[in-house]
Figure 1 (spheres, rainbow, N blue to C red):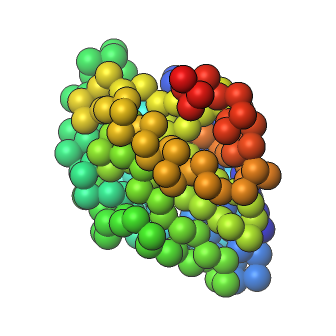
Figure 2 (figure 1 turned 90 degrees about the vertical axis):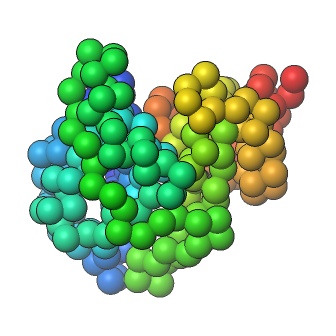
Figure 3 (figure 1 turned 180 degrees about the horizontal axis):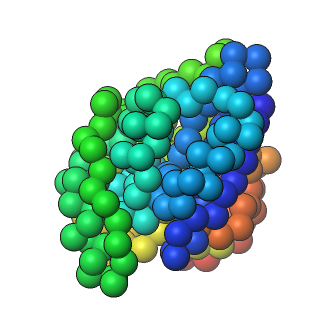
Length: 209
């Protein structure tokens, strides 16, 4: 299993490249910026990108959607609730003094329990609204790996003061969908360092209020 993290853009988004070495199929998660750097990594690993996945629609996570879709021919996937964020990304970024181009609409929508495949490897979609209404996490059970976007961070959780956010809903999503996973599941968030489910269950202050 290929798993590479590239930190992109001025807001330090963790963009992930996943690949199945047997089938040579790959996936890019949250290509927020630095498109050339992401494409160079894909070329270096020699994988064929099957999916471009957005864990949610905020502008800092989707800035390279169009370029990567055109360059790789991959299918763009996001939750339908976050489409307004994707197609209005430029306006959202401008409010923060940043420049991002709008994303195309997804080719297909992520849904809770949906399974994506890279070769024989299965990635389960977990819908975890709260940071946004369309927020999703990606779980690879066999690899003990969880990509959480801006839902869950090391010792923290996603902000909920933006449009569509709800702190109560976010905590409920984390407790019902993520905390039941095995302790040794490695958590890879949308920003910052990795953690584990066991670590967050025991010590995350937002989950133990």
